Each structure stands twice: as C-alpha cells, then as structure tokens.
Image (cartoon, protein in one colour):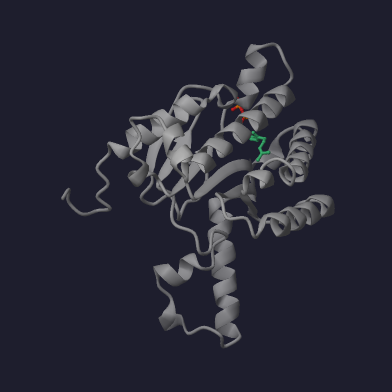
Length: 248
Ligand code: FPP
C-alpha cells in the first residue's frame, strides 16, 4: 500500500481520487494515418496504451474504469476494420487472463451481447468468470455499447418485471433504475477523459456521466501517457464539484 502511494505523482491527493474513471479512447485511426500506417495499427497501439493506463489506475487504487471499445454505431465502419477490432478485443480478453488478471483486475463487458459472435460471447463469459474473484480495479469494457440502448434495455426489463408482478411502478426511482443498467452496483463516473480533441459524449454512459467532470486533450489515444492521466486527475481534484448545490 505504501509502495502504491509512493508511485503517485506528488501533486495527486491519494485521498481524493476519482472512484470511477470513464475513457473515450479516440484518435487511433488518425494516429495511424499520420504515420502512413493502416488504421488497424492505430487500434493495436491503442490497446497497448490501454494496458498501461489500466495498470497505473489499478496501482493508484482507483476502483473502477470504463473504456469505450466499440459503440453500437461502430458497426457502420468498413467490414475489414470491424473484423480487426473484434479480433483485437477477442485477443485482449484472452490475454487479459494472463496479463491484467495477474494484476488482480476484474474484467466485465458492458453493452448488448446479442449482436456479438458466439466466440466473443463465450470469451467474455470466460474472462469475467476467471477474474470475478479478483480484488483490484474493475474494468468495464464497453463493447457494442450505446447509452441510449442501455436505457431502452433497462426500461424493457423494468416493464417485464412489472408484468411478472415482481415490481410495483411506485417503487421506481433513480436508485432502482440504475440497478437495471449494465453498471449495476457501480458508482457513477467521476472523471471522464476523451482524447483526440473531440468534445462530445458520443452516446457513452449517458446516465452515469450526469455529474462527471470532463477532461479533454488533443493528444491521440495511442500517445496518451501515465503523465497525462496524472494531469487529468490533478485537474479533477482542483475542480469544485457541486452536484447542483453550492460550493461549501
Ligand atoms: C477510436 O479511434 C477508437 C475505437 C473506435 C476503438 C477503440 C479500441 C481499442 C483501443 C482497441 C482496444 C480496446 C480494448 C478494450 C482491447 P478511432 O478509430 O475513432 O480514431 P479516429 O477518430 O482517429 O478515426
């Protein structure tokens, strides 16, 4: 524990860490194009960057990280790129058993699984089960994820429970609703990071980002470093979070 604290940048207050970080890892394609490489090379480099960032978050003692790996809209990319991304994700999940799990990471996939291949669905179940008893950071991989889809999915399940007599509409409040989301049992996003200069939510965790502090950088995701992560956290710690109230 002392070792972990020593590793943190001295400007970071270990007592005020964001509990849940969300990352929209954007700019892989541009990173590759700038180098005259195929877009797939950018995604591979992005996956390497992700490993380093998750490891650092885990070492720092951050409890949850959610990364936007593949959105419900990403299916509209050329088939070759979609296939590459699916394969990269499959390998990431497979290797995670050896690499990240060794670091005590709990891995979960969030999003609609119906449209994923049987092979990926099976691998998700395997990786989730394999890492379920770990005690380190929880890493949610948003895979075929869309914030609107998540909300519609929750509403449908709520309706089913009402029809089945398991739920009374009077019981529905924000807390109950959040229990029907893919992130059930997890805190909302405290800090949302988006790379590549874009400043929008892109259908990412619409409910959970309600009071997130947003941090943007022009850097492309494969160039994002541990130092950038520290800067985002320092910035977060200097913001006055009011949640609609007034500054104490
Ligand atoms: C955005 O860059 C990135 C993606 C759509 C895919 C993100 C996926 C990875 C980093 C792969 C690894 C992730 C995991 C969890 C294994 P872009 O392609 O939109 O870049 P561009 O905006 O420059 O075109």
